[in-house]
Length: 261
Image (cartoon, rainbow, N blue to C red):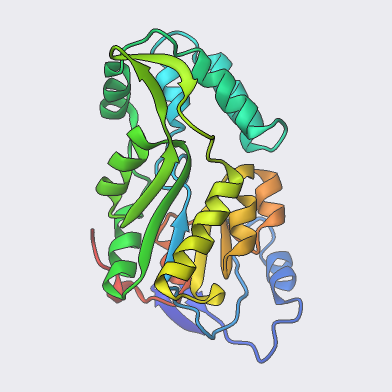
């Protein structure tokens, strides 16, 4: 056993994984400890592709916008069902955004300033991976108004998202252009692999909602982060308890190698 962070994370080497994860989880019982079994080869990733809402930040941005105009419960219910994979993502997004029609763009500025916060470890995750040559990309089914700001605050190289349709300084209640959802996230992963010359097993996907599943399954290591049940079941790995520095421990980084962003 090798400690990566004293009292927080450690490695145990196996000659063959077998059913080591199941055995470990059974032995641990209800202990709040994350377990991930993975190959040692190319463990440190050169590309991180991460979801934004409830992954890099602690909020769902559309829910926060809705709460400020009196339709918070209605929108939050749609968000929850979409993230659980119970309803179509694009249809749910369209229905939620329609409720914002007629409200000023300043509502978005207010929401970002009042509500949006980075999850613990977000800056450390990107700063550490960047120092070691990795590209960090934020890929969201949300909106670039927020992804652009969160990407800068958290230290991502690049970002994608949807665009609010705006006329005369007000939201029209429509999405401008095709909706970026699950397929767009997976496609962005593949685009960056090709652009940067990075192999699949050198990539990591990180997300919590059903629209992240194709991306998580396409990455070299897909990690369900504090995720919905459907996502935890579909992803190759999961972190249920650790903060975002757990993503560094998964890659074999020691605590003393962390870079504070």
